[in-house]
Image (tube, rainbow, N blue to C red):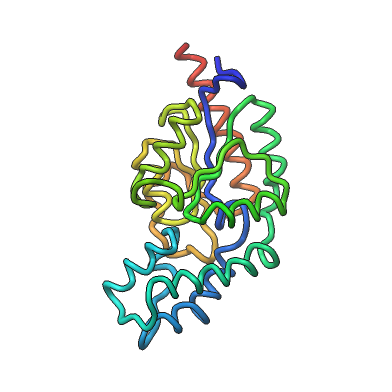
Length: 231
């Protein structure tokens, strides 16, 4: 049986598009400002690199598009946009506080596992008073980011769980692939910004905040019941 000191079941949340509606704002910033400045000719579509760590977006896109700025300048464009996106624009998805409270009542540890840098994550957590136990940023991870599974494998181990007893909530194709490759149960959140994304590696796909939070709670209860039966 799991306890708050040594939980057998853990829950990991991506941030962008799962906790806050930032993907809409990022798509606007990328499509209208960042990509037209950074690349020559017709700019890439944001969906091509959704969920990637932003310096890695440059590496991926530079293989396909002619660049107009250095990687350092590309990163500065993102860092400048992030101040407005996270401090002023994003809103918390409805039901998030209630779901985190329900997970806490079950004695589970929760973490944010994101391709955003820690200071962007901290801005969101502080602004909306979100009580996560741990934060894992690809920015601080010594290895490739999503869609590779390493950051999730590290988070799962640190949380004292196993892949079989970990639930991950993601919205990007790269994030879903990373979590699935790590062996976790994956809930994918499909919205307008990722309508065409390949979320097929996920175990469950939901399409509204209410459905998302309902499935988080029921799936966690199933994982807890399965772990209890195995003890």
